[in-house]
Length: 104
Image (cartoon, rainbow, N blue to C red; front, side, top):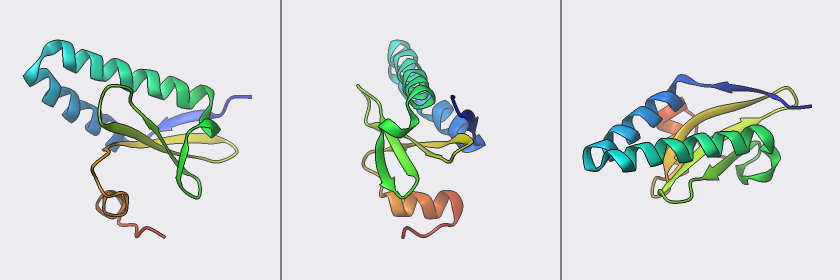
């Protein structure tokens, strides 16, 4: 049985901002970025337990041709996609800025 998938608002903001950044450089790059995010989300939906664990129940699915990763967590009922993070970002700082959480 597939889990329900839910997106936090920050995810859509992240995608919009990064797509715009790539669109300003090349419309093809912006479209390709969005396609890769969509493919990552489909992978997360279909195989949520298959991606790299960042900490406890928080996981990430990297994009193939862009230095970004989709961050999400799962429980028995749903998968929650929380955002898109650049690989160069510090995960602990990203959590703190995004949610006011300290990395464990």
